[in-house]
Image: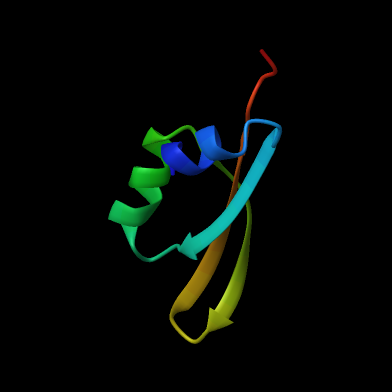
Length: 58
């Protein structure tokens, strides 16, 4: 993820989604600075959490 951010330095807002019921995935993205912005049901027993990260200009 950090390589992608460096590859596209003009992108200021990154958005992704992952499975809410996978706490290790959510924790991984939180550790990289992503914050949850919304959750939507995908199918029974599975929700998607949308996360974003803002990159400040240099």
